[in-house]
Length: 330
Image (cartoon, rainbow, N blue to C red; front, side, top):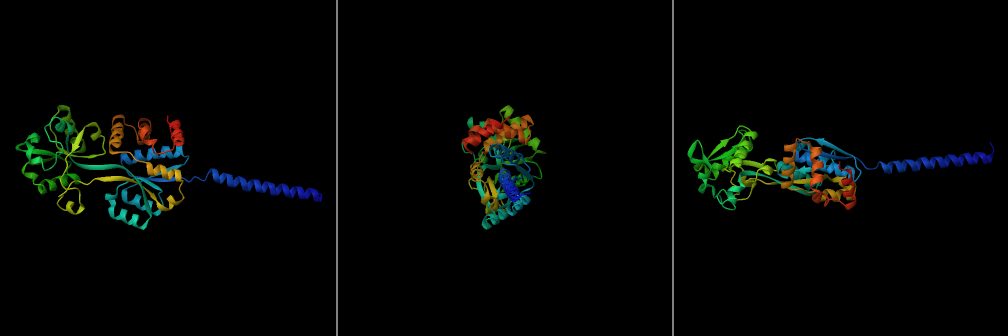
């Protein structure tokens, strides 16, 4: 081989090497979007919320995702340590000490708020609309209206459907009745199951009768049946709640949170989307009712949400991302 040929071969090898190096960089760029890992609590709102976010991340932004199911404290630890990138449903009051510690040390960052969850004693809204009960019906009014809720087994008192024996809510109703002095006017009737509690509420609605009892939301039940929560004069205060329940039931809010280190390198558009993410208690009630009526799993319910509530989720993302998501819907 001549010197000129050797030089040509050397230059060709250098060029091929440069092409390979360049190709590797290009390949890295194409695959540089790391999988986003989301924690998932074991109930419907968390599962549907995750599926909504996953669909948008995958089809709107081109990211791979992974969902890790678990319970409150283990998932929170995973989020702190960076095993998880996101958790779309965090309830501060359910883990207040651990929550405050993580926020104080900066290992977890709150991105936004989604919906309120609440519980307590409810009455059918039609009882207020037809004038049987006053607007703003509260526990202070209950002594004057016990006869509307007369206990079929004790005509001297009203009855409160307090939930299932063993539920924390049933225990709270027992304590609260005495603390508020309502045991003089009402008996508690603990139903045997959640199904029995719902059946009692449904029966009253179907007949237009009075009903007073415990429930919570979001839930499909309070989407199907229009109920109004009875208020209390003293807002929730943890120091008053224990041990006498001498205040209103707690209200918590679902928050979106991210691991702080992941957030530092996350795509700004993704972060903006996650900060914008928000539904409402009413919307959660609606999609839980859809699940109940159709038997759909969380993934199909997320598709239903994206189709039915376009006016909500398109506010979370850019027009370009919204177009991609809509194009991907079945």
